[in-house]
Length: 251
Image (cartoon, rainbow, N blue to C red; front, side, top):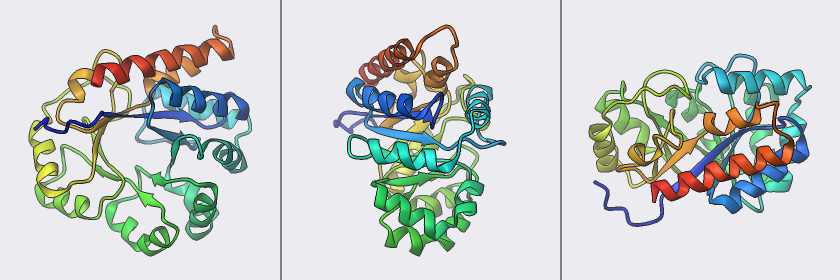
């Protein structure tokens, strides 16, 4: 099924505001230069159910540092003109600000869309008109546990890209499974680009990218963010080097 000749995309996840605003802005710029096509700007949340221990720790640290949503908005204002930016967070963060309000704000800041892992497809549909009016795309998730009928329903509304969860579980663990069947089925049902996430790093990226249009990398970058032995510029250098390497590996 790997007949998609375009360059495969790299989606890079970082935790917003960790350790501070300027660092996030500088890192976003450096990731773009290193080959990242899309930035997933993570909104720190106290109970990130779909994330593994690494991203969970980063969420906790950012909240400890006093993260407020205004910080997300300030970072976004500086980076969206340089790299396609999506806000990744749990629905509570969007709901508390008001879905209408946050969608208008995202649009005004140049944000492309939202990635909300705990918002089921059916509930997304109830906000569809708000998102559409503000030209905000909400990324659809498909998982190996979904039935064919469910996948068909989910991907029929998909825009921007489809997030294929590489295995059932949490981000950052290295479990692998054969996804060729689900990839083929999604391909039959949708032309929307299909990106794979969960457990993608320098060791796994080449294999995981087979048959899909791109990869989503989070824990591999956030691990460096959390490394207290590195100063800011070393963190940015190391994360950018990983991004550059993964972009080369998948192409």
